[in-house]
Image (cartoon, rainbow, N blue to C red; front, side, top):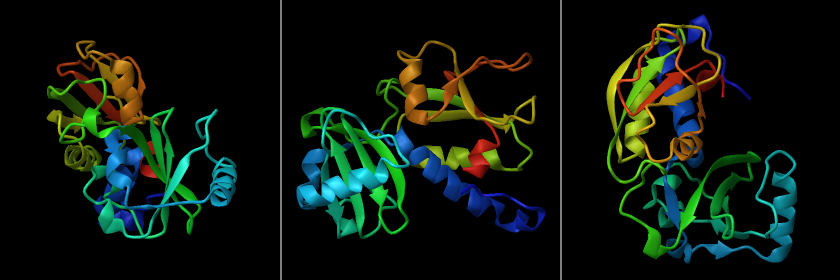
Amino acid sequence: MGITLRATDKTRTPKIILAVLVATIIVGALGYIVVAKLSKLTQSPQEEIDQLTAKISAFYTLPQGETPTIRSIDSPELVRGQAFFFDTAQGDKLLIYKNAKTAILYRPKENKVIGSTAIKDKAEATSSPTVAGASTKKWTATILNGTNVAGLAKTYQEALEKRLSNVEIVTVSDAKTKGVTKSYMASNKKINNPQEVSKNLGLEIQELPTGEEITTDIVIVLGEDIIKQ
């Protein structure tokens, strides 16, 4: 269900937007989780795996061709050391698809997917989450607010910088073109794999409209979908 910001919501806008942005960024943009660090979580029996995958697949596209391992998060403190689990709750279920190298966090009591991310073996891991495709070198970004919601770009910047270690936000401002409905990113093509960056940020790649310039590695243009997700 989307969040609609009414005129009476103005005093609550920053908090509401921050919650939405955190939920948005967590989907695929927190780098990865290390499976080796999840050994203390209880593994679900096959019957529960069948039940949960059937329930989730009714509204969410799961990786095909393999049966996941599912671990129950009975004690959130056991996983809080990994950034992906910053907002996990007791009772959440983690679906681990080793072949697809994907992990999906599901909350049964709300029947919704909280987030998904890549998985790595301990040997592949680095010390902090980064945006895949951008290497470990810091990349620069411009965030443009393509909506009429004041402060949206700044709130997005704060959420992004808290979750990723290899991003430097150079510019935060309003887009020259307002009324953007769907958020997107543009690249100066100096990043090794802009498609992978796009995938991990959950943003499509588009050309900037006339009048906007790319002066950083990435330009993120925020649209109404960020508010309504």
